[in-house]
Length: 285
Image 1 (spheres, rainbow, N blue to C red):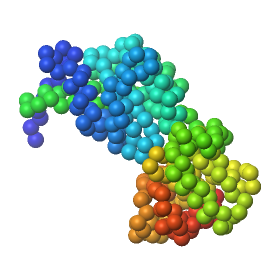
Image 2: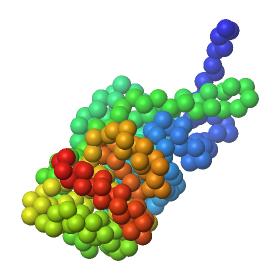
Image 3: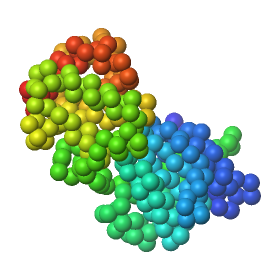
Image 4: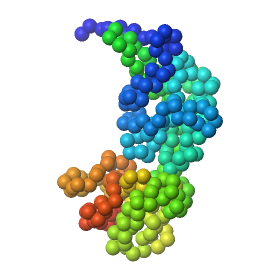
């Protein structure tokens, strides 16, 4: 097999290509960043400080947001400061999501790798080094992750790490009254096998209590149009087959939980199957 040498070019010094071009390429196909199935939320998002966030993405489940800053050439102090500032602004404005800052540059130097590494103990920053390749038929962009983000903030399995909120927070900021009502329907279903169960409103999810004590055998995560129900059950083939044969909107099994996307009326339509799953999780918890 013949080896072909790749020709790399500097975007910073290119006579035609610029940061706007890179921004449009990434916005059209966020998958090239290698961060999963991202969905574009906004470009050039105006910030209260007067600056503009280059790109804002979310993951395909809408749980994580990525505040993304571009820099042609080597990264510098202002680039890092902007990335951290915009990440901080967005996480304060939308605390119901997990947030990660993404810093992209053509050259991320050893010095700034050290600086980013220090911040990454407290701030979830992802650093991507961008390489521009001239193929002869066009220009390609390749991204290499040189710093990954540490997962910060409350972890799903640790109820004590979550900040308590109230129903109004979920109805007016994180979700809508219609999707929060789905959690009520799930609770009513659960009360058929334990009348002492109740809902507990946390900052990142709605959990359960049993006689006033935290008992999170399942979690409800309402959004604007639907609710994700996480049912904590060990994965097995029998459950997989039943769910595959159902009309439920299944999401990826993650962190020991079956995840189901529910819209208004779904609990009524799938009441029997949801009750079986929830009761199984309750007894297994």
